[in-house]
Image (cartoon, rainbow over all chains, first blue to last red; front, side, top):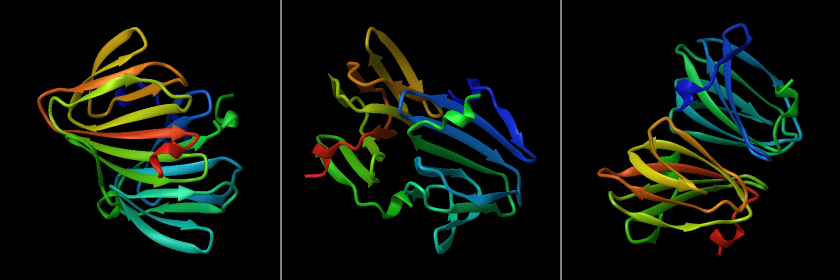
Length: 104
Length: 104
């Protein structure tokens, strides 16, 4: 149950919960309205489920507004970033392999 | 948006939607009340998010009832199965690597 998974504040307005497997990892992010995540990339493949709220994502050269029920796919090494809109946003990021740098 | 992803009837009382990446795959399953999925295993690592409903899962030697908001982890090759309880259940299964046998 996500309620039982500790939440870590990883930046201003962003809390992260993690479930860590062997090659599979899930991170649930709770983001305050208007928070931006900087454009970045990583060699890990990612899919993101929008659980709640609305956000504007950029993936490579495209931009789109996503809402609850949307799923995004980020191939390895593709630049991506997001800006939360007017409400709290909850995202579930799934990665393979696991983001070792999150575990330190 | 899951609403835009076609649903395939894969067994009596089970529909599956798929989002297929490179090494990462998401399957959203809608299962009717009381449906059972046979105990099985696969070399793919799996995590399952319970989106809606209640089900009794067995994972290895343990059994538990899961509800919306629960997340399960199935290490590679661990036997698992489930029985839906009295309501429709929606599960999101995440796999790595992808289940090639689902794509034919």
